[in-house]
Length: 462
Image (cartoon, rainbow, N blue to C red; front, side, top):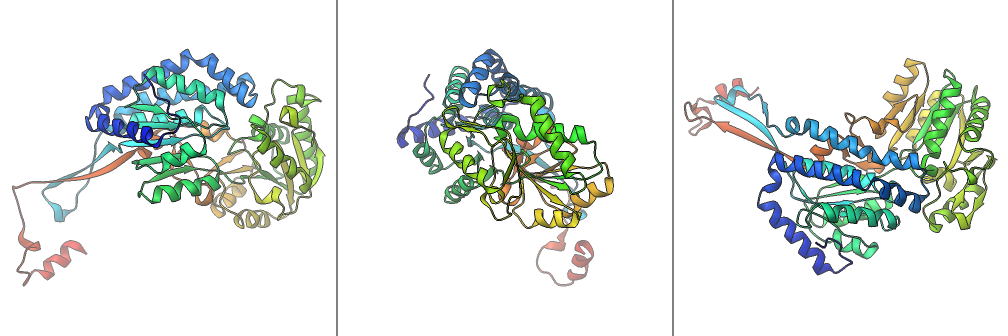
């Protein structure tokens, strides 16, 4: 069984055609079939668990525990299995008097042949998680893992290869040319996770075929810290969320907006948390990851000059290491504050008026996540009502992704569409509207000739 294609446009087209034929046969629409495939996926992941963790360590030097965070996809599979029947069940809706006698339903039907393009920062979970939704919804799928995480891509390919036939689920590995060849094809949906710049390219390519897209992008996720907080817990949760995976997390706090009253204390507490987490020399810590490649390392190293380094700033190119770094005095128009950091560098700004902090956030592109630390419910509500972001987490960071009932996705530049839990099923489904009419009664108010019927029409429709 061969599901790996190393470029040829013709080979890619052949796999797509095989998947279209398989989908048209109708097998994927059967709920028992979908359940079986989800169970197969779960079993395969469990069997390759150690290899997956090892690959994540090779690609990103992920600590073992951070690698196991990606194994949370097993919980996602269990959640889908538990709720699949209710998700797929047709939904009856009310009909107006003008339709009497009639009944109306919404059917969730699979889209068909979908493409999922994964990122390099969480190279396993962020391709498997949408795949769960695609399987649950009854689609055939092509997966394109990131070539920048080659070891994880290899293990993922083996896993899919050994579990599913290519006419149902296939992996296509490769670089930019492979992605271009895939995007030139006609899919029923494209799901992309990555940066905004590439997201625009994906959307442009999809538009040529009128292919709908889900874009899970990123942006500069702000973190507002009020003076009314538990300082120790706030520092701990910010430090963890920011420096998890060496800051290479799309929803990591990108910059802090700290209340002037507690800024100095907050900085001291975060410094202590960094020491508590990673020791005096984070490079030797087994719990601190590395930058994915030299290109990203060089980009991040260049950002260090955009402010005053008050902790960290150490770099080792040969180890792709950048220490956990805190920066103050960054100009708002500097590259550090203009682009998503996606690394272990945390700029800290201050505010003395909450409206100014909100105005700063609103002057920029809508972020994927927004964080609020405050015990004051009025302040929480004021920020919620006056900002726009993909999602919000209050008094913690990153943990919002662990709630299957919450759709995860961006808004504006941070993305289009959402997934997780039922949102994943809905993303890969078409909500088909169906109206059933009876032959028993048929009122003549809508048929010509229309003379003397306008008054009745107005009564029925206004």
